[in-house]
Image (cartoon, rainbow, N blue to C red; front, side, top):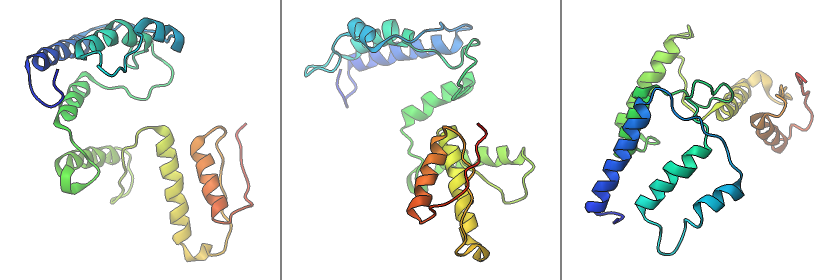
Length: 201
């Protein structure tokens, strides 16, 4: 299969992928996989990164027959623990669309349409919170990034208040929270060597 040209093998692979995606999206009860040790997976799939490559068909076969079965789908009804996402079927389908469209949403210059969609979604979410007019937010990759963003924003807002000049800050430390640990290091670098740590432990 060519990397950049559309050939017969590419068309076949596309059809296989679409068939898999449709089957997964419409499946009423997806298989609940379970993790395997790295050694087990290595024994099952063998060497996959080779000078010649293993080809798209073989790679996809290994994914369907071995690798996907060593994962726990987060949308499964029995997945009740850490939930990084809970996509609807419509969201899954549109993820396929945006992925195929190769959208980069970091800059308005090249991602205006996608960023507009994101901003409209955020406006709607903010409207549900009852926050005052002018409030807004951002989508993050997960809770840790959200916590860090919120704490850094709070710190910068505190610093802008002239009444806080030359004052020491207070950080409420969340046990085993990587976001608070990153912020602590930042405060140390700024000269805040002494602060009170409040722990819920």
